[in-house]
Length: 207
Image 1: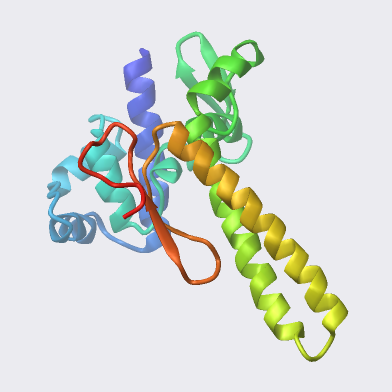
Image 2 (image 1 turned 180 degrees about the horizontal axis):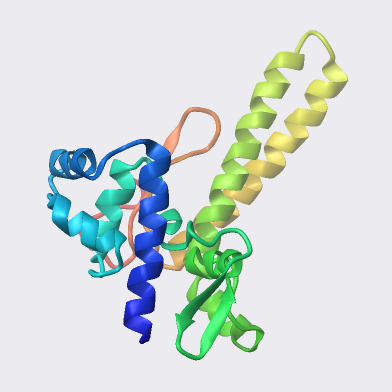
């Protein structure tokens, strides 16, 4: 069996697993896709599940939205966590490892680690920004809760808040220097700042 057929069977199995877990028939799934303005006929959906038709990126996306799951679960869900998958005829790996590669977390092979990290740096930045913002929100909530009740704890959370704000500022600057678009970055105090892509002359980073 060629790699194209293997991919089709693999994706179809993931889709069928997700659809059955949601309790939807093929007919209802087709209706949901139509409601999302990317119509896919029931027969086409059936062929995808049977591995007789390879879905496009658009189709994988709308099916994932319709099933309230992620594209990654459609592609890798049938073999998670330790099932082997064949990404290429000469490249097999565990499904969880393939998922980490797919999401920009880890390279498929260690010999390309530095190149992979550099190519996926925007994903790393986005993840770090979200982690720091969540830590900032937590420290602010905790500081407010402790004020007047335990001032020592409140001061500890205040220091955490300041450290998070400094980290957030550095990450925002790094993202801006990397040419990324960051809209409505919350500084944790309710105020927001919009960063524009450095190559867009129509956007003002300080607007």
